[in-house]
Image 1 (spheres, rainbow, N blue to C red):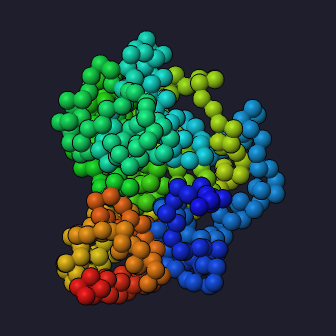
Image 2 (image 1 turned 135 degrees about the vertical axis):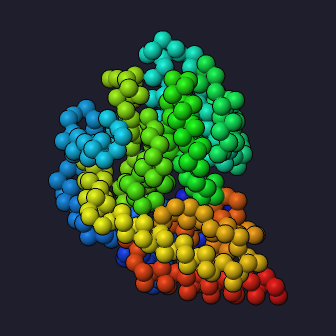
Image 3 (image 1 turned 90 degrees about the horizontal axis):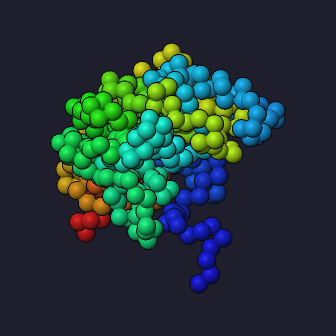
Length: 396
């Protein structure tokens, strides 16, 4: 059989969207889907948000790309806004979350190199992590499905148990460059780290003069009800990777760092042809406009609380299928007693409801952050109907 024009690395479903509007997607033949996947936490403003669309259209007609050989008023503006709204002093723009992670890893290693400790190259990361698909990113995880067939992986990574501070403490040494952690694991099963664990990593990093790196590619940019998840925990990293929602659907990521952490990232140490181009900056600026508006983040918190309460009321009616809920804000997980992928496919194919499967048999629920109560009610109606006929089919 001949290979397909699109490299066959995805098990693509029969859903073929051609248009989006708010919290809905529409297929080639007019099929309508309630989108509680948001392009895997990317479409934070839903589909076709007028402010984002207008900003992209205006910038596309003005200037899309010039490369980083020249000054960037657009990039300077968005970087300053991110600095003003975070712990960071400086920002490097990328095209994706994986690239932001690569920048973070390089920043940590370079931090020690310029201080005369070039032997300090090891990054301690955690089980079930997902940091992207580059060689560096898959070297920082123990998930065999990501690593299989890509040996030799990059040296300099040690993977220990997530949310186990004693394991992290035992792994730390005079070779440790930094700790790389998702405050809330997404692909790994919507698992929030405990506050004690993240605070413990902060203390360990300080004790060992290492850097604390947060991967907020999925949990950042409003998803938890704060602009960044670290703000919910009250634990401040030295370096942070963000992406997904920052562009609202336009490819954009960023690596944020303190001045001290980024001291080694000088001219020639890193770069990107497309990263931070004017079109991406216009998208990021527009997303930040909306998220910075009064009431936006409280709305995310309020919708998250209502959705979680609805899920917790729903679960006892289907205790044979579900165990409980996880997550924070509008990054929620529904833990199943069986294969979550099969249930996600059932909701999609039979009820027009889009969710995302995650590790540990969790259904990821990631609605646009502009979701309203009517959408939550429709979601629960579809979920309830889906659970009922899924259970009947399983019992037959």
